[in-house]
Amino acid sequence: MSTHATHGFDVETLRRGIEADTAAPLVSLYAPDAEVRIVDRYDQPSRPKVLRGRDEIAEMLDDVYSRDMSHRLARCVVQGDQVAFTEECAYPDGVRVLAESMLSLRNGEIVEQTTVQVWDE
Image (cartoon, rainbow, N blue to C red; front, top):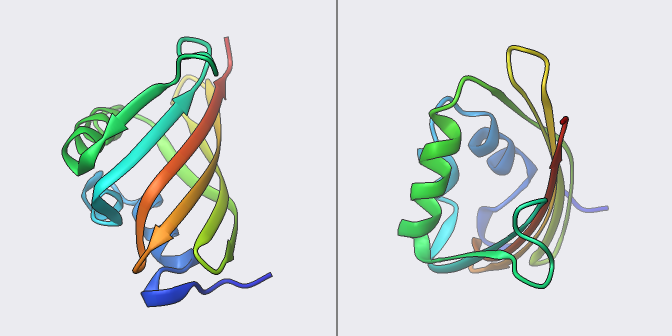
């Protein structure tokens, strides 16, 4: 298991982005033409939510990071230009969210991400 990829992207860079107080550090890791696919109870595998470009991704992340919740990078594996990670989130009332993501990198920036997320209901 490697913790370093090409062009400066590594586990600690991702951790700092995810665990920051605002979305800006995480948004900065995405390429301008990045694409994110999200699968959850609202956006099923046959119709995932698709965000195209850093602006759409930033809008979604700004919304998420404006909520009163914590974000923690639980596990991460970097292998070349492929990254897999688990993110654990929690709201103050105890509701938890778990997200599993797979990333593809180009020149150290995220160009493609697929996330499957589930939460307490």
